[in-house]
Length: 128
Image (cartoon, helix red, strand yellow):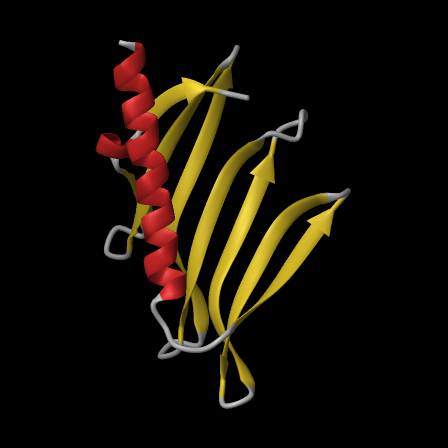
């Protein structure tokens, strides 16, 4: 049982890393990060791509925390150059119960205009 939980947790971590690598690391060039903090905690980070000496919007990450400063939500937005606006992409929610944390993944569905659960990526593991 414990092996299955750790394996699922590892797969979740791989998916999260791969998603962000594909969305942020496949382009040529440099990236610039602008981090926003509130009360010493990062609440947002905007990623800009450097193109011909200009900063171009690329990704935006929004973070929410509980009263113990544990992350409860991580939302990723992608820049739409066609619409000139940020658009929802994915959301990860963290639920804490005792020593366990459940990580729930959602993908934005533009037709339904809501996040849809990805149950195959949802898992529970021990929190540090």
